[in-house]
Amino acid sequence: MKAILRKSAVAKLPAGYAVDTHLAPSYQPWDQRVCAIPNGDLYRAISAGTAEIMTDRISRITPEGIDLVSGGSIPADVIVTATGLNLLVIGGMTLTVDGEPVDVGKTLTYKGMMLDGVPNFALTIGYTNASWTLKADLVAGYICRLLKHLDRRDLHWVAPQAPAGAADAGLTSLIDLKAGYILRDAGHLPRQGAGSPWRLHQNYVRDFALLRAGRLTDHVRFGRRGQQVAAPEPETSAPAQDPLSLPGTGHVDVGGTRLRYRKTGSGDPVLLLHGIGQSLEDWNEQHERLSARHTVYSVDLPGFAYSERLSGPATLAKLAAVLPAFLDAVGVHRPLPVMGNSLGGAVAMRFAADNPSRVSALVLANSAGFGQEVALVLRLLTVRPLAALLMRPDVKASRRTVESIFYDKELVTEARVGHAFALSQRAAHRQTVEEIARDLGTISGIRAGWRTALLEALAPLDIPTLVVWGDHDHVLPFSHLKAAAAALPRSESYVFSKTGHMPQIERPDEFAAVVEEFLSRVMAGRLAAGV
Image (cartoon, rainbow, N blue to C red):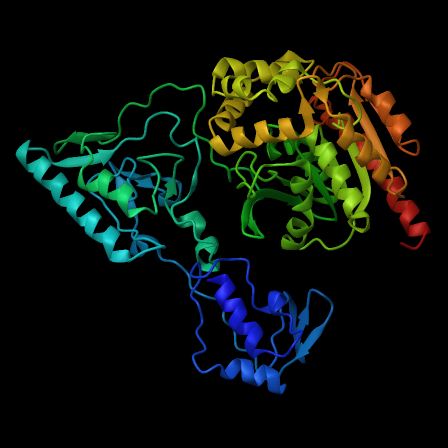
């Protein structure tokens, strides 16, 4: 359909018209409503020069018109705002169960029609790829089956009950359209999990089997009046986590991929990138310390933690390639310092090599890219049968992973182990870890090819670089710091004593002080040079 629409536009517009700039949105046809022009009058007006399409973002409204982010301006006598729809989830109702309020935006859906822990309540979400009424008919039929079941057994209520871990395995919005009005109110929509019956399938055949012929008693509780709906909560090593609980966290759509990010503080911006199998939480301590002088951004790289995957296998190049659009999406257009830990360091270097005008400085903490040696478990992940076994969610394995990161074992807290375990339960996260491990390494260690090419591209660039390392790193050995100094002879270095793989966590005050001193000198140099 995109090809059909594009061909029609090319045929009706002047030769060389920028169709792909102005008439190729990031979303798919029917993710948002398709605006039909049956008689083609808009295209004729453009061809005649009496109408124009401008694709840009608004910087501000002025008395004369509109200033654009790109630096241009549009004079205007009249501005018609077209900001789209706002959703009113379940008609604006508020729900309480046994006196406790229900936050619909944090509640799992059951079979795409009921809410976890909410009795005798159903909603209809039809298909976005077929007739809405097909799903509405299946939901109505399922409700009738439930009512008959209650009547036959003299029961009064039925409520879905999600098993432990269901909420951690892949929380996403109930409706996966990329339309602006969906994304704006995604936080108010019920959640869906990674698999049935906690996922909304856009598939009539699967739903027919699930709702018309499926069992009524799976993952639900039945009761009579007077009985409390809430069941005793089972103990679990990975309590449900809210991806947006940290101050400043949110989601942003980047080229059709939804990324979780965090923004705190004010001042000159800095960007923080996490390592393989990790998340933006690795930078919590630095958000607290750097926010006094900087606007601090961190992001779950695509496929990791609570960010969506990009299409195709994950690679270092793809992770770095998304960063320019991410920065544009959050409003950062000038050069900024980029800090990366472990894999995040390699991503930062790749980003700098490909976009040197957007990076004012690099801070590489225990970064990948300077040597072959790496922890055995990361080498084993490059062997597919072993990777499948190693990546299976297991609390003990999550604890070993956290223990390997820190020299100070007091940092191996239940909260950190629980967070690692919650991430391991996310299928997209596991897949991305395996693919990145295979992209960058083999059973023998980190590949030399990409390391050599990256460092050769980065070394000639005039980007101030600080390389720091913990002297007791069991993931990427301390000896790599010497290799970094040889590969980047103009770089500075710093060593954290009795520190493991994440000095930004293990030595937070010292790390922040070292970074601030480095960035102050970099900024002074740029000002002196008139940059």
